[in-house]
Image (cartoon, rainbow, N blue to C red; front, side, top):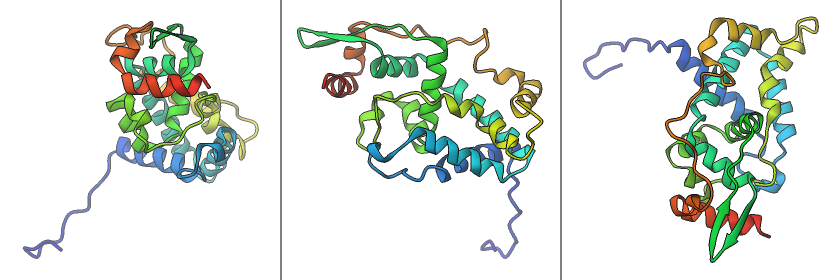
Length: 218
């Protein structure tokens, strides 16, 4: 009860708030190695556990998960996240102490990379959106040689198929029908600016580039 003796009103969460809670709860509960060293983490195992976790719920929960997944992928469609992908994945060379990156990103590869980021959980998601150099803050542990998680795109449908074998892609198709504006792979996507490449990334993100560059050079 409140200090004035009144019973507080029950707080009703919106559909988006509930979907956000469901999404991150599923991501984190299915990761058995959240606090472990990167060498113990397995993407395929995480995705398999996530699929099994979602299969225990009804269709509506799976639709909310897929809807939220598509929204989060769209939120990560930024120049800064693209630059993180370039630093972690693209070819590079070092000249006079400066790392110089090729800046080519494939559309599909960038989707799979963003899926990989989402599997790291809500805290990381918020940190990385605020500053991609939080990747090397010391709070997180990664295998930077394996930065794709394409399987996350199919989790909701695979979970539904465990109990409804005759219906394929029904969750994704339903979300596309209900929320067409969430299309993370559509032609209308845009970034606030063009991602940088070359030597610019070392200037923009010195700590990140130096730590990842040294690691990838081993």
